[in-house]
Image (cartoon, rainbow, N blue to C red; front, side, top):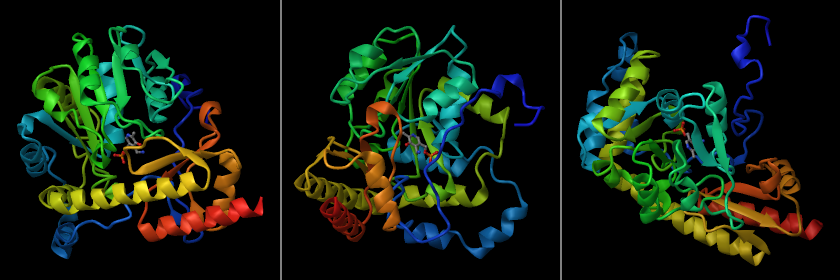
Length: 355
Ligand code: PMP
């Protein structure tokens, strides 16, 4: 730390992203990327002609991309916000819709680690709400608690989803507060709340192209809400970085939406592989949560979470371990291809035999 850093940020604990190692080739099951490449239309559209235009700024209104997203989800372009990854949108949302202890934020204790970082970054009081013993969210905990509400659905890293009725109950019971539903993993088996944005003016749904749409490296996220909420996010964007999405990612996003069928087929494959892997892990004595995401959350009585993570890493397989006390026995394993999951299952079988 330099002596120039603002005192506001001296104690800030930054988010730790999953490892992105460059030293050797791992089977990478640690950051919930898609194992499948972008669709052919995306690849073809990223032509050298488009690269030639990188001397010019990108479209700050993202007109085409917003139109495509609006069309797919049956809303107007004015209901759509796009930015440089959904992390960017979450950051903007904490800036826009939370305020010190006047408008605190409530989110689950076990959830996406960035929520507490954004709360701290923006000096927002956080009500951190424990999950139930089975790791599910109790919707009643988020009703009328006089704060902005942030919920990942499905939740991460547990993978457990709330039904649409429960989400609607939370939104309905907080008419004077914004409810943000982070749907990063929704395409793998949960119900999206996007349709509810037509009915409730306090609902903001945040989505990403990083998981189901194979574009983690393009950094592209979108959000759907009332025109007024979207206008607030635009205000923050135009006050920080108007050209928030680069030219190539705008094109990749448009093409990915046009190729929706390809990505939804991939999601089906991932769901099948998830179920296959969960069954195999159960046979090896693991407990797994009822994940509706593109990852598995699992623990074994025979081996600790950290030990399994380290032993798999030594064998060239990366999974994610969190040191947080309540989940330290668990690991989060991204669902890769069937071949990758077979390698994982063989490696775990060997590791357990060696104990
Ligand atoms: N929300 C959740 C729950 C996530 O797990 C992630 C990915 N780490 C994000 C949002 C952010 O994804 P991205 O910035 O790649 O869109």
